[in-house]
Image 1: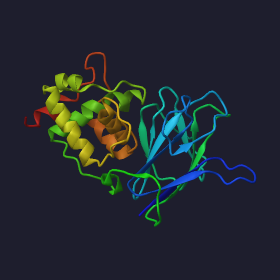
Image 2 (image 1 turned 90 degrees about the vertical axis):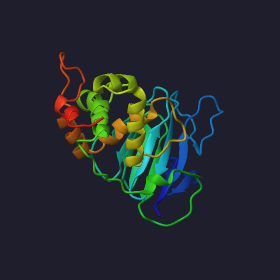
Image 3 (image 1 turned 30 degrees about the horizontal axis):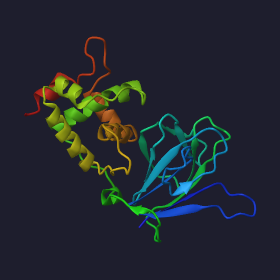
Length: 252
């Protein structure tokens, strides 16, 4: 059982507020401007920036979702000097840092939280229960001849070649490219979300599964490299179509 703790900045002679989670648990934190949002850790506003995040705990990693409308947040590994990872609004990303600082992007005066993570540890948690699928170590084998693989390649092509700000295709757009119905595309996306064990966030919006899949792929370089080979860089004449050979091998 893993244990994760989210803690506000410590002040002199004061015990910082915090909450702890076990495997499968989720918790929220941030600065709320309206005062009505239910957060497990509400931070004091030290600037005009209001942001919110959600953390989910797995056995080998933890995931953070940016619930903010227009504020990006960063996750910095305390033990490494590498550049912080940016989590865009509406996006979630997995991490395995033992200790990390989470705060709004480019806002030096905004409050932050520190995340402490012990994979496979033991202990209690105060957060709500989450999806048990998050607890699995996920490294599924993909069949490049399967129709779901073509759907995944078409879905991820724009962000793999254009970066995280590239628009995520709709199910209808993917359906047109692959000669499927939008309902069939949605079924393949549901299958992929379950296959990768992507947890269901507490706060969901339309299209969250497609965005979660593209984020999952971007965070795994070997998978991203495989999909880049299946969906070459889009050009003015080819658009975002996956290569025809992939589709010809795949039965309907």
